[in-house]
Length: 297
Image 1 (tube, helix red, strand yellow):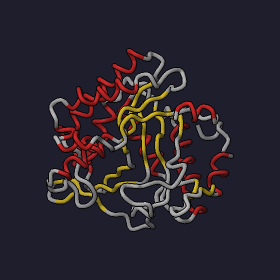
Image 2: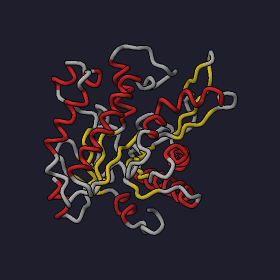
Image 3: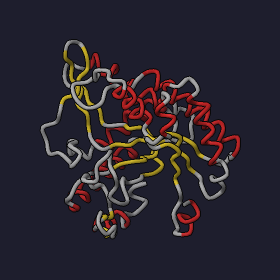
Image 4: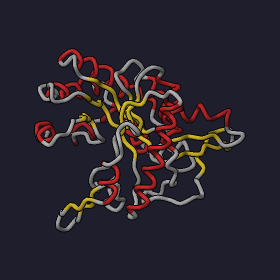
């Protein structure tokens, strides 16, 4: 895959873990296993010959905060919020941070040229009036603890799609649904979320460079995809103008994908016919490719 990408003029950006684990690992405790780091490092050893000079960037775990949220839901615990997923399980949070640090050290020892980090689900979290006192109790375990773990890395990934309004009920933070238009995933249409997420995480990671490792929209209206992306890139450019160190932008996604168990939310710049598997570039692909890198990078 790496060689094929290079042959087509692409720079591979490798992610080692993207939500999937072996069945035996999940069935025997998954990230709750006391030897989770040791087991994960065995898979890292298996791929160590791959990231030669053909690969520069490697992500250890995609959206570790969502992995830790799913672990808590699997246990049947009550959600920590009024809707959506519960906040990350603290035990899995600790395990994943340990996995990240040990994997990064192992890869750097074998391949000193590698630039290793991880991509975090960072939405534009905004406190409602009166909820400022509990805001930190929501954002710190949700994503900021994972961003703190990336301090000193070559990069930290920010993956943003929408905003989350945080209110207060019975002294605890709760998510408040936006009343604006929704995307095919049910998320609020809010392209400016990217700039807000970048600013918040920049305040956590210090001098660690940021890469937008995911940003996009699930829509069946490609004109809306272009307008969303245009506004998101503008908000990113404004953040860069304010001094936020953003080194790159990766759009989610190239082709329509299997999104959390469903083919209906179409994120792709390229449409996929699920019967024939024919791929058809959408106008948004040409539009995004035409954006001058000096304006959006």
